[in-house]
Figure 1 (cartoon, rainbow, N blue to C red):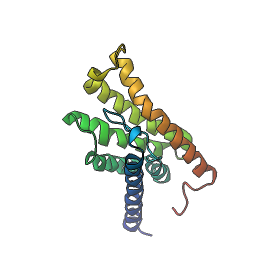
Figure 2: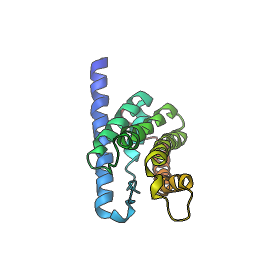
Figure 3: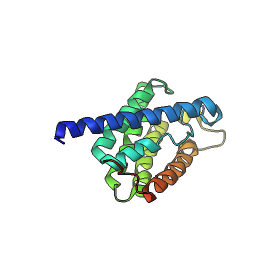
Figure 4: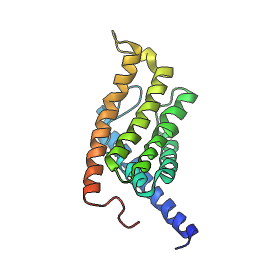
Length: 176
């Protein structure tokens, strides 16, 4: 297969994995709206797994591109408050999930790195734009870390668990 055909195959695969993530996210919002937090962020039905899986399959370059595109698509139905916040919470935060592709031989570490990258961008956004929403009696910095952890920690646990099963069954690179 020539490079152009190979790139086309990977691009088509990226589109499918992005679509799966979008479908899982919106299914979560429709059926479990109580898991969506007031200033953004939600616990989903493993909506990050397809993006992480794709990144682990195709490597960091393709992963960063696909995850950033996912972030751009998510802007359309996202929680938008400030122009710079949009960049931090969507293309940059979700794009960071693609970092997992640098750890193809250690998928759980890859998931942890990608999700931590996403968490860091949400923290930066929170520190710049959302400190004013701190819970009564909370330090604003502690609030930002805790608020983002309320959805990122469960997302990390679910994603790492599913990717561990996929990796154990040797499905990450299936049909590549």
